[in-house]
Length: 112
Image (cartoon, rainbow, N blue to C red; front, side):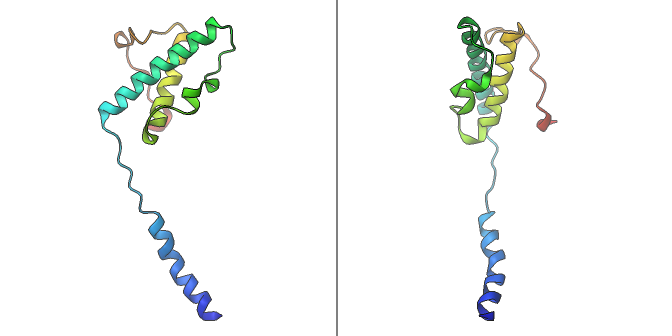
């Protein structure tokens, strides 16, 4: 019984170390820009539909915000851009077509 406990205690760190061998490779900058543009456009259009249909403004009700149509590594970038587009429409910000005329939104707190 003691041998079994000692064996388990010695192998547990090795097993756990094998599970942590995940490397994060950031996506290329062009992919992030494309996802951000798509997220901004989708958020802007979602807010426009909410106002047109007289629904209370809440981006969390939109399927593209809850389950973004992007690869897993780009979900937060898409949601951040979606949120920016949604807020831009509600606060008379630039449309996706005119967005290039304005400075980009400030970075999220996690990027600072």
